[in-house]
Image: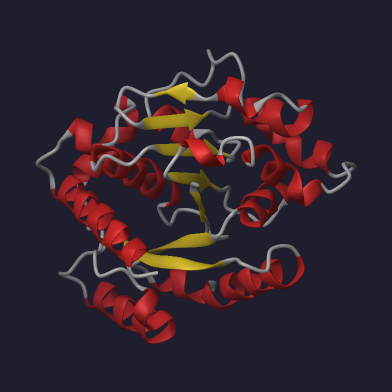
Length: 256
């Protein structure tokens, strides 16, 4: 049965989509069968995998709002073992349309029951807000990966983020837990990055991944080519970091 994980942080610009795209790709190249679900209306994960979001037949919107079979929405990427349920601009209206649904926070969870036995990991890219789309993802997931940017303002929302996860655990999904905290956009030349790492480790302790994702130009360029960094530039520092993260992630599963 697949382990279902949300990549979530209410703050924007912390590297959620970059984490989702590149961790999924690295896990697939480690031989794991991975499904990424793009539940962010910006659909950046969809395009980051090289899928044309303007030219897909079915999306996650059709699953959540029209009740389509999720199996029909799964798209194979160019990477072996890696699949995606895409999103497109239609998803912007889903928050409003879900508002009147019965069991509106649990819609996605019911659909995922049909495919849990087909993958090793199902990883959901959430929007940077706590609306019904994010709530559907968190209610469906066993754990959450929290990306945090190595900048001062990222620390300000950490308390609220943890309170959000506790609230979902208390009211919607009692098994929800933190999978890991990933430090993004690290620049070892600055005192600020070093201080942020220290503060995050104080707060989250052993939940923080040892692997830290550096600031890397090639990593920033890859999405514009519709490729994970491992395909775009396999020798870059960004690629090496995500390969290391995938191995750490897999090792962690063996100890849980």
